[in-house]
Amino acid sequence: MRIALSADHAGYELKQQLARACPGRPRGARSRDPFNRTGRLPDAAESVALALRRTGRARRDRVRQWRRGLDCGQQVPGIRAAVCHDTYTAHQAVEHDDLNVLCLGARVIGSALAQEIVDAFLSARFSGNRAHQRRLDKILEIEGRFIRS
Image (cartoon, rainbow, N blue to C red; front, side):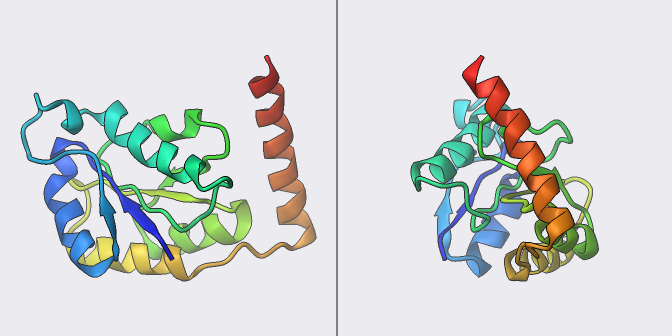
């Protein structure tokens, strides 16, 4: 499993802590300096969204960490992202909505809880049950209409 971790400057420390436990290539901020180009939120979001898209399919084996609720990654086709601050939400978002990007608030949760949330996210699988598949198909249909526009 390949995992991409990214953060803006505010999430730099948590990204470094998660990187020790998750085999992956850290992206985004290289320091806590908010004026560093790689520390800006849109750049951090784009780095993981594009890495995920380069695989040829949007898979849920990538993790992005950042500090704000507005998700720039959701504007990239094939990316389904959510801010999750508990294990239940992270697990259910994968099972029900096929979430493939996890967003965490470094200023909201601590590193131990963040690791538990990441573990719940990575261990979850899309259920494929009829209701969940219909929901995902509808999301993909709507996304497809906007991609063609």
